[in-house]
Length: 231
Image (tube, rainbow, N blue to C red; front, side, top):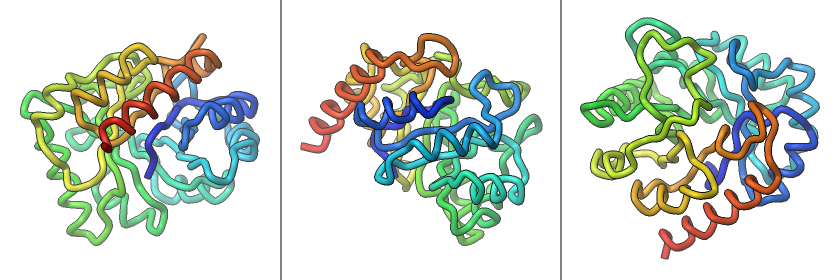
């Protein structure tokens, strides 16, 4: 679905800058409690500034399908990223959410746990059995089941890239997230073998305020690393 995504974009100016820098996807945050959470009005303004060829992804956690679809139609969104827990209390996005959101493509944020990607595989298989597997997975840093919605992403915590590579294939394209920056994204791609990258805090001046220099460096380094991997 994407190769380089910059998430947590909060202004039209940053959206234009991120697209010009080379990102092919921009994430708009709709998770209450996050410092990057947008109102519907602001989200519409940001999305209007995004070039047609750049994917606009809405990030949600535990939001009912009907509310997601309402926001997706109003903004509009090209895809939805579910960032809630896979199961076990807290803020959960269940496998049936993919079918409920169809035909909107779903990107599923998953966690690299001590046992690898077992829970992610089970969630994806359950969604597929209901007729709508996610189009892509984003592997983010592990969190506890008690983690509040607003702290599920954008924290700067990193994924163990070697363990991610060892965990094996998920059967869908995989992006790596969690603490990626201009200085480490090339290594993350090389070690993790991920097909795409996703960053938020690693290219910021402050939560929700993107740093043009970091964004440009990140996009250039990520694009080059992904090109080397593809050869």
